[in-house]
Image 1: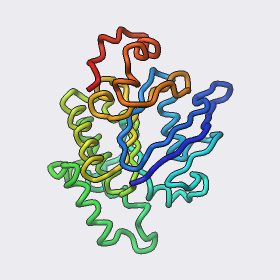
Image 2: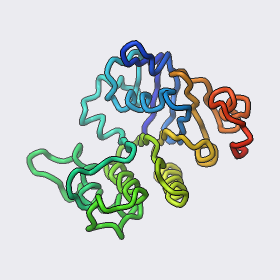
Image 3: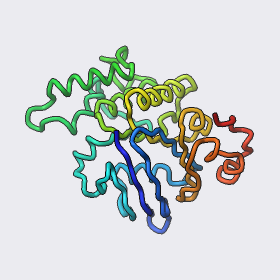
Image 4: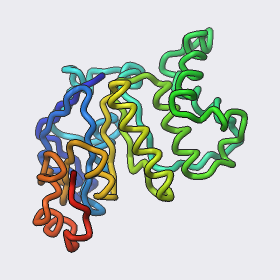
Length: 248
């Protein structure tokens, strides 16, 4: 498990601020959703946490260590990132995709070890994608491919899992399947999970804590019944709060 602390984090793209003075702490073992309208800074927050955002200000600590002091391979062993749906430019089998999660752990001269191979097998079994083994990942449905990407992250064996809109473009069945899997990885395996979501109902139902971003600022942080209270939903999202099922 891993914990995060942000203090006064800011990020801008040219003259446009993406994050403004964001401060928060996420304890090891938490399951947290990040919500907000388009352009609110959700994906920018994930890029900062993953160490890929340039020009960030403020401080981010992972397990008490400043992010900039961690080497890339060390960071890759501590956290795993599941991006939005990705395009695969060449043929690659499902198990080969999952094995990419072991690159930070592999000996650069000896290649994958027995431990690496076992981690891949365990991740495939843990996520439940054994029936997909041997198939070209390009031929999978969007839902199947998303599960394979999560298996890749599980094989990485970092204590923190960051997901950028893991249910985007998925049908309802696969949305629920992904959410149930994330809940199980958190509650049974102890992974700390931070997921960017567009669907407020999924956030309210599956996450005990919600962060609400608006205009790059953190405007709410708490359980869904508080962070996604009707007045907040109307103010931030500009929609009738009755469209959101009652949290809890």
